[in-house]
Length: 281
Image (cartoon, rainbow, N blue to C red):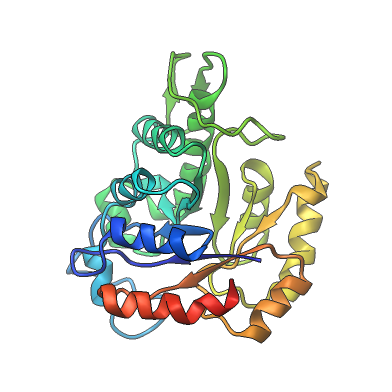
């Protein structure tokens, strides 16, 4: 099983270059970074995990800049977002960022797609909360048009783009309906989420990985009903605190990659946790 990591990299934590080098040297599979552009102080949206919102949420580095640094000092390490808040981006700009990072890293990028939880943050980006999933779906389709091999236009409910010359292209070739880098959608199990995954993604990025025994058969059914190849579905439990029993359970479910949560800390503490996690490699 491949073991990747995720961490809230901030202006107070270990630096991306140092972490990326240490991950590759130790044999970890990848580095996934979350995204928050800002956290409004006057926020009524509760923190999903309960209690006070941790300090690191308002100090998060831009994931694409940080992953670009990581790509430049590594050769094998996977690079991903966990997750990109697609609805909060201009899709033409985002398509260029994604394709550039994937190109410069030699196809090592994984796009983790998410819908967000912070209403106030999304509102500052002009996002209407009740339609954010449909907006994300629309923007993913627009980006696929820009990533297509030939100039392809797109006219959607929320945006459009003319048939255009748009390079570089993501390294990975189209597979089924998916165009672009490896794409995983995050979120809680449910019919709408599973429909999105089957439509435009390579798989699911479930936070914490709970309830997979019940959820996976449902997702596989939706996936196959959409005409997707059963063997191609990827499920990657995210922000996991590993134990031997938990990882063995994932392996029994056919899961091939797990993303372990690191603390948003300085170099010494983070490297100590990496050493402790090395037993799972």
